[in-house]
Every structure is written in C-alpha cells, then in structure tokens.
Length: 472
Image 1 (tube, helix red, strand yellow):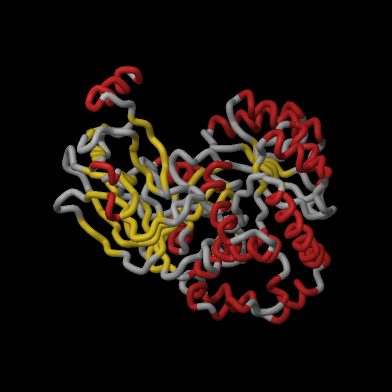
Image 2 (image 1 turned 135 degrees about the horizontal axis):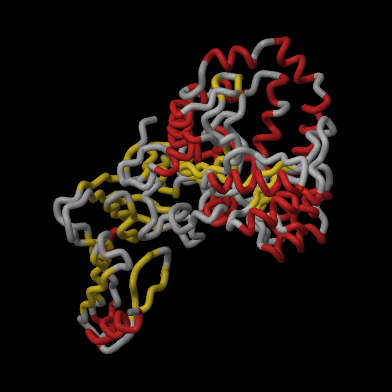
C-alpha cells in the first residue's frame, strides 16, 4: 500500500514527495515542476485534504485544509507559536483544528483555511503546547486531608490542572476505578479538562511471590505503568530489597508494563537501573550523581523526573510563602487551606522538623543533579508530585519550570522538558507534547513569551484542550 501511495504521488508530476520540516513549518514538500499542484491525503483522511502548491521559482508552499464531511473546525490565527519540537518559533502562525486534533499548522501565509471555519484571532499572543506533568496525583485530597478518592475529586483536580495550562497528567499512584474511567473516556473532541494516565496503587510487596501477584493485580486494572517505592522515607521505614524490586520489574516487563521508581538515594537509583527500571520518578537527593550513574541512564535511555517543587513543599510552610498573595494561586485554592497553613503552631512544627530540614538540604543536591544530568544529555521530564496536601496542582507545575531555570536550565530546555520530553518519557508523544498535525489540539495561549522570561508561563490568556476553551 505504501508503494502504491508513492506511485500516486509521483504520477502527478513525476517526482516523489516527502515529508519534512522547514523553519518550524509542518507540511509536505518536494521538488515539483513549475505551476504543478499536488493533492495528498494525510495519513488519517478524516482530518483533512492537504493541498500543496509550488508556484514557479518562488517555491511558495500552501497548506490547505478542506472539509470532507461535517465536522467542527476552528482556525487560531496570527499567533507566535512555540510548537515544542525545538524548532524556531513560528511568527504570525495559524493552527487549524478539526474534531479536536490539529489538521494544519504553519505561517498564516501558507495555511489556507476553509470557508465558514470559525476563527479565533490571537494577535500578540504566544501559543505553547499544553504542559505535561509526568508525575502527579489526582482525586485523593480534600483540603489538607487525604483518603477522599472519588470521581468528583478526580474531575475537580483535572479541571484545576487544565486551568493552569497543564493539559496532561500522569498520575503515579493511589489511582482507583474513577481515575481509570476518566482516562478511558477522554479520547473525544469534546474534552475540556486535563488528560489522565494512571499507575494504580503503589506496590510495596514483602516477598518475591507477592511482588508477582501485585503486578498481576495492577495489570488486570489496565494501569499505564507500575509504580514502586524503594527508599526508607529518611530512615523511618525499611527499604525494598533488591530481589523484590527486581521481581516487580521483571514481572512488569513480562506483562508489557514499564516501572517507575520512587527513590531518594544514589545507591538505590543505581540498583533499580541495574534491575531494569524505566523511569526515575524523583531526584537523587543524598549526594551528587557520578559518571557511572549518568552512563547507566544514557545507556538505557531512562528519563529523570526532578520533582523540585515536591522538595519545596516539605519545608516552605515554616513561614508564609509569597505566593499566598498571588491572585493566580488564590483562584483555585480553598481559603481554609491557606489559613491552616498559616497557623503559627503548624509553621513552628515544620521549622523544627528534622525531615523538613533534610529535604531542604536535599533540594540543593537535586538542583545540582538536574543541571549535571541535563548537560550530559539525559532526558528530563517535568514532574511535581502534586496532588497530596499542600502540593497545589497546576500552580506548582508553573513554579517547577521556574525552579528548573533557577537550577541552570534555559527557558527553552525547561519548556521542552515540560512538553515534548515529558510526553516522550511517558510514551504519549504520538498524542500530546508538541503542536503537530494529527495530535490533540491541547495548547496554552500566553500574553508573553516564556522563552524570553520563564515566569511568563503564568501569564495565561486561555487554555484549550482538544480545541475547547477551558473554564478558568
């Protein structure tokens, strides 16, 4: 079939047409005779017909989307688009959305929009892909209390994430039936909240046999990934022995599932990598990573999720954080929760907590390790561990990008880690993470460019999921 398609493409003008990217433009291009017009069906014909015209020596390419059947089409025009692919931004760009997915994207002069298409003008705005949180949690917290998992709370949290521009969340633990139902209902062009992928219960087996059984139980739930915790919670619990976490990893791989690992110590990180772990879900925080660890990460192409704001949350409430007066933060938080966190007795308790001070010191190590691993080419996936009490969903993800820049990453690297690479690391890059044809139209409209100054990530004008404007 592929050969027949190539012959049809060649037969019109006698040359082969090949897909390539040029100057941030996603289109079909090739060498044509002057004035030759070629019509190519995109891989999924229900989205569009792409008309590519090369006019004389000027070589002007036009992207034309023409309707084939009744559908919902929207054209977002005149924006500066940072598409998440690491290509140069596209100025004065147009994004055409059909049935919730991107049908065409490129400079407005090269995108022809069908008649009667709804238009949304974004003059002076910057558009980025929706943020992807590779490590979050949903549905279990009310105020400062856990243990309240419900369908209502799952939906509340997914709407909160989306309001802050986080359009995809990978929940790494405590997921129940309501979460999986939310996941299984989200492949629709009418979606208006964050997408959810979930790990199910965090596994803590006591034996090799139990390890295999718990993996099988989670696989029966159709989890997206298996999550284990191997550290000792700063000396308060027993570590998971290597033979047990290896049994989990081996059984998960036999069943076609990846394994994410909660850890703290460099020694444990090396151990789980040697056992075949697929995703490091937190920073190494006890000591600086060494060349051996970096080599292991790169050899297996394992992603590293820093969760810097998780560390901040362990000690920051020893006083009143500055963001407690930020209107953007206050918009989606219960005032009672703020008042509880401002209580003098609670703040004094945190100030005197040895664990809090240990995590504060660990943050400095985590910052150094993030910079070192990024410089070495280890893939970084933005994650925050938000969802538990006082780890505020959506707002903390915005702060995580700023924390990564403070650790030494550039705004561009921080944004890529929070879009394309987070999606790649969680095997979602065929759906989200970049603004490209056939992917979901999940994007954030900003009033300023985050590549110029990363705090501009907070200057949200609008958020769209599947081309639908999110209620903020």
